[in-house]
Length: 119
Image (cartoon, rainbow, N blue to C red):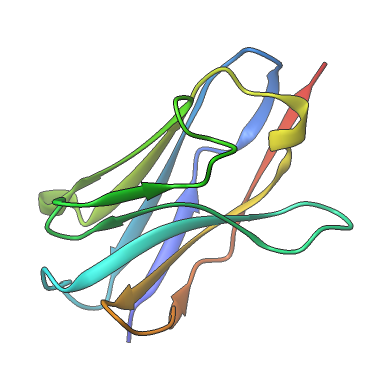
């Protein structure tokens, strides 16, 4: 079984930065795994933010965060990061990391970390 634990959320002013971490435990991901970040804001549906292959050879971003957010991974630490710069109030949400095998649906989810961006 895989456990994912997010951290790094908090309160930041618009224009500021935060770096989220997602630590995986329970198994070692193979290069076929994909780890993604999603967010859920009040009154909205869950939104894809970014994902990265465990091999690191491919990343994807939602249009709303391109150029501001960067996803990366540290295989030695079993950790995926989400560097968030130039934060906007509309980035306020609970951020979740999730993992899946390539070509499959997301199977493992973390508990989420709150990000609040004030104006």
